[in-house]
Structures are given as structure tokens and as C-alpha cells.
Length: 74
Image 1 (cartoon, rainbow, N blue to C red):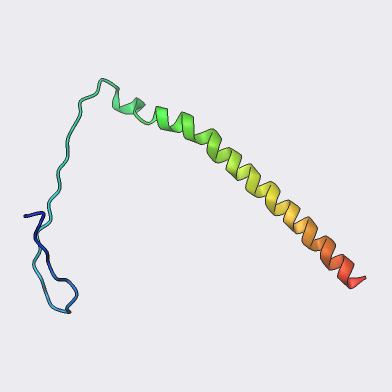
Image 2 (image 1 turned 180 degrees about the horizontal axis):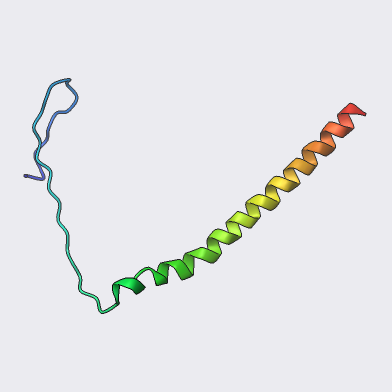
């Protein structure tokens, strides 16, 4: 329970350790059903941009590699 105490876990033996944490709860007037709306609206377009960029990047890479392979085989 003392944050300044040290517990040696390097040896292969059974050690009893007690861990604790602290949480501070903050009240809100937002309904439970609407709490994730803020995160869904801001993060969704960003995810879609990355998704489309990856698809285009993969297609361009395949085209370049196909071109290189065709050049080598000719």
C-alpha cells in the first residue's frame, strides 16, 4: 500500500502483493445513450480517410510491381 516500497519480482517464487488504485468520479448531465456520440462523430471520417488511402496505396504498389515484373520478363 506504500507507494515508495519496492517488491522484488525477479526471483521465481510466490509473492503476495496488494495493488490499489484511485478513481475520481465526475458527474455529468449527458444521457448514457448519447455519451459516445461525440467520439463517433469526430473519429469516423478520420478512419475512413486512412482506409481509402491504404486501398489506393496498395493498388498503386501492385501496378508498379506488375510493371517492373513485365519489364523484367520482356
